[in-house]
Image 1: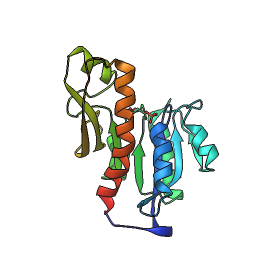
Image 2: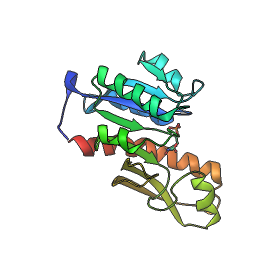
Image 3: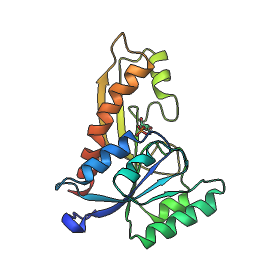
Length: 192
Ligand code: GRF
């Protein structure tokens, strides 16, 4: 993808469903001079997503799209993105699957972060399953999005050691910290 800096930063939308710590972190990153992206739109499928507060704080446009009718919802999103000339999408805790049709429209320009060492532990309850299987390592992965859950080409991955005392919540926190480092690095890798 083409490198773009300053006012010509790549116009980006972030899709969320919940807490939004990755969103908060991406907003902070986007304000930096060396960030190739600007965040111009935040989309949530939930009106009560905690992460929406960052849209308010930073005065970034936000839109709630409920996905009750996925086809209609995707149509609405495509119109919005086109209107705002958005060409890059970061999923950050977004709990809906995007269709092939939608992804084709944004070919190669939709990425996601997942809290495991993909291709291992796709889907939900990652940390619980990792601990149950007595894994020694876990981590996080930034990857391109396909219509198959957590399956697209890997952009970057960070491995961490699981300690014997780790519980689901300590592992989640540890990995989230790494996610916040990895996501901006992956975006830089794509554009620079
Ligand atoms: C993160 O662990 C991310 O990898 C996964 O969902 C979680 C979202 O966390 N896809 P947050 O909403 O960014 O805090």
